[in-house]
Structure formats: C-alpha cells, structure tokens
Image (cartoon, rainbow, N blue to C red; front, side):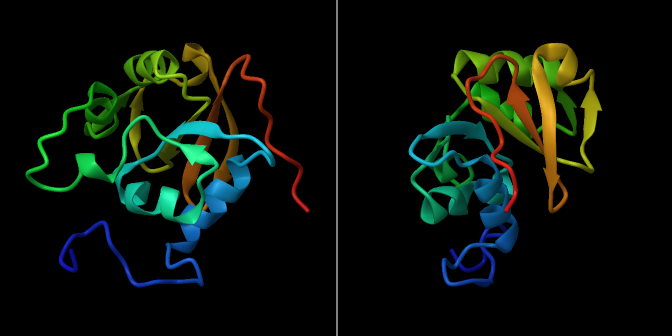
Length: 140
C-alpha cells in the first residue's frame, strides 16, 4: 500500500489530499447524497472524506489483482477522454457529476453530451449533468 502511487502523505486532519476535500466540498449538497465519477488519483480518498458522495466504482478498480472491470472506469483512464462515451456511461450510472483533470485531452465536449462545466477546483473541472436537480452551493 505504501508504494501505491494513489496514496500520498496526509495534508489535513482527514488524511486526504486537500484537492479531494476541495472538490468534494464543492459538489456536496447538505442533507443529500450526490453521485460522481472521479479520476483514479482521488478514488482512495473520496469515501474516506465524506459518505455524502457516492461513486459508480471505487478504489478496488485501481488495486492490482482485484480483477474488477468497469466500462466507465476504462473510459476515464484513456489517453484521450471520449466525452460522449464518458457522459453516456455516467448517465446510465446516475452520476450527476463527472470530475476531469484540466490537463486531460478530450475528444468532443462534455457540454455537447449534456454535462455542463460548473466549476474548476485545484486543477479539476467539475461537470454537472444537465437537468440534475442539484446545484453547486454558493461559496461562503
């Protein structure tokens, strides 16, 4: 576990990277659960930070030899992200949010596929499914 590239030294009292906390705090809606697709580098930490954010796959897909396959995860780990495929699979799995790193190359756009960019936090773009009854709370 200590050699796994997805685990890093604690940056806060929750023992999660501050970026994960910032992204989660941006999408959390008090009193509700939200469902979001995260990149691999955030997977081990999201549920550790909050139970209010659910995911269609978790850290088990990045742990070697667990043999889990997930079509959405596969689409999220390509060199170029196929926005149409990611959006379609995210919708099928009832994910209101898709989180993509700002440096990733995209084929197509999330907006053309019913996901609107609502925020950029710590180098990650946050996309919200069009028509989702969730909105980003105003910053304090």
